[in-house]
Amino acid sequence: MTIAPAKLSDPAVRAFVIAINAGDRDAFTAVLTPGATMSDDGSDRDLADWTEREIFSVNGRMAVQTESHDGHALVAEFTNDTWGAMRTAWRFTLAGGKISRFDTGQA
Image (cartoon, rainbow, N blue to C red; front, top):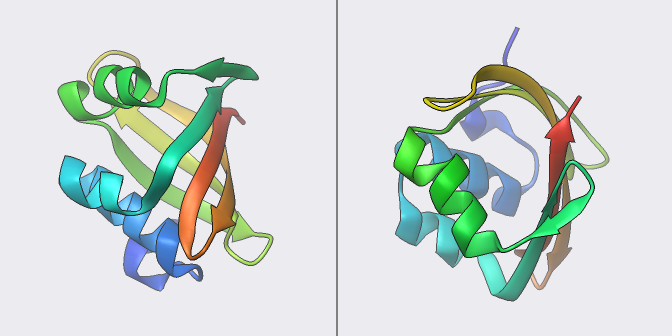
């Protein structure tokens, strides 16, 4: 069972997922605060490098299975051409209606 991205509760998180699934770098960047940060499996990563390598250059896609914490936490099947499909958890910190940090990792 998946949740359609358009049905996600938080507008910024909804835009984040829609941008990833569309491969839209500009829309993805627009939903982030300047200086936004992220981590993968507990280690801080360079956001621009990581998103290019794990999402945009390898056809990354999210199929959201659950959302919690007012839409600021997701469990999704994340798929890309490098790693295939994996169950992942995503947690979002927002500031001024935009994402200032996201943390992801295997769920």
